Amino acid sequence: MLDQPAAPRRVLVTGGAGYIGSHVLHALTDAGIPAVTIDNLSTGRRAAVPESVPLVEGDVGSADLLDRVIRAHDVDAVMHFAGSIVVPESVEKPLAYYRNNTVSSLTLLDACARFGIDKVVFSSTAAVYGATDRVPIDEDTPTAPINPYGASKLMTERMLRDAEPAHGLRSVILRYFNVAGADPAGRTGQATPTATHLIKVACQALLGRRPALSIFGTDYPTPDGTCIRDYIHVSDLAEAHVLALLHLRGGGESLTLNCGYGRGASVLEVVRTLEAVSGETVPATFADRRPGDPPQLVAGADRIRERLGWVPKHDRLDEIVRNALAWERSLPG
Ligand SMILES: NC(=O)c1ccc[n+]([C@@H]2O[C@H](COP(=O)([O-])OP(=O)(O)OC[C@H]3O[C@@H](n4cnc5c(N)ncnc54)[C@H](O)[C@@H]3O)[C@@H](O)[C@H]2O)c1
Image 1: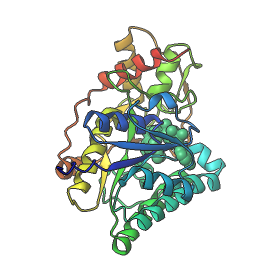
Image 2: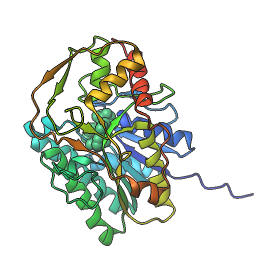
Image 3: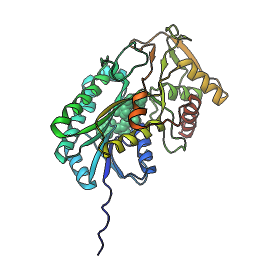
């Protein structure tokens, strides 16, 4: 009898029912890469997970659950999205953030070490840089987080680096700037009604699902006085994850990479783009600056292109905003 070809091994995606994880599951599925996801559905939704991907409902901080899933699905790599993501909440509940972001990551990395899983793609954040005034912010900028959220993520970065010489665990750490937009095919999007992302909130305000958008600070040293951020389309970000996984599966070395386009848009530019795309007015009010908001956060974004061959396909602000609005309209009001 001829030998059957070995079934391809699966990637364990934690937090695959959430905003970014669900886009990555769709990108993996589109690329024919088998996956399994663990999600406790604290902010995620079952419906966001593609039908072909097994969803194991449970907590990524449970070593028993991780053991069962890794064994049952022949996992060879991990993509780690599960976590808590709201910066002001992390200031109110720092220990909850260290538990869910840092301690759960420790449990996950410990499982990787025990099972010999040697490839991890980790969702980090530009918040590890803190309130830097560098423009753009490249990956060699010193890290100095100013809130527990950023610190909780930086601690996981450190664990990953320390685990490499001891356990042979290679990683791609992706530091996201401002993730926005939705799947152009409408399969998934940001569905947390209380999300704090500007483009999401502006779409909700436009559709009358939130009070007016508050624009915090109009006297920043920027061309129109409002804050500038580097918005990256979530589908381009998802593609970067697939490339990072292929890099590690191909034997590639550990990398730390910013995820952004290397250019920013101001709050007012975002609002005007949304108005142009929709033909409607975004109800907005002007408020004082929020403490801790730097005028500009723009990624130094050359390294990810050089090291992963990443070429963004959705990097126009009008496309990001159009996809976000279409997704928002598709949600029950
Ligand atoms: N959205 C952004 O702009 C942004 C920016 C930088 C970094 N990140 C990082 O990207 C990752 C994903 O963010 P998102 O925007 O998709 O958030 P999200 O809240 O939509 O997704 C997080 C998912 O993880 C699940 N989850 C949370 N804690 C869990 C646990 N203990 N066990 C199992 N599942 C758990 C949630 O149910 C949810 O499905 C996070 O790690 C976040 O820190 C996001």
